[in-house]
Image 1 (cartoon, rainbow, N blue to C red):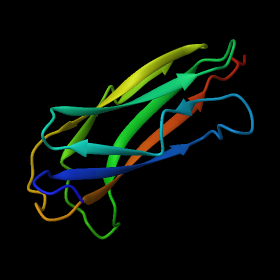
Image 2 (spheres, rainbow, N blue to C red):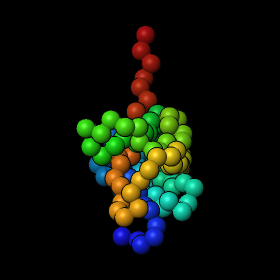
Image 3 (cartoon, one colour):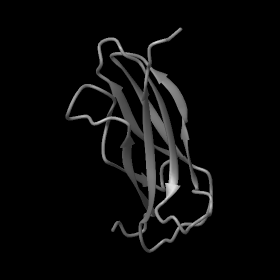
Length: 121
């Protein structure tokens, strides 16, 4: 797609909330292109709720279930609390591994939002 530049497409999926139905966690895009010439890629996570915090968990998976190798990326922070009306940025960092020079590679970027619950006695 871009001659001479290795790129990686991370397809983002949001588990646990739907951004168009009600307020909840909103992810800053549906895909991330990781340019191998840069040190990292970023994507924002926003909580537009007025009072409810969320626990956000994120990770990268291989695109095919049969591929059991460890993906060559890590997400930081992998787990954090996102308070009401706050935004945070997830950093995607390459940890190594060989990727093809002549085509893009696809991995899944998973972002799970876990809403706060009421404490029961």
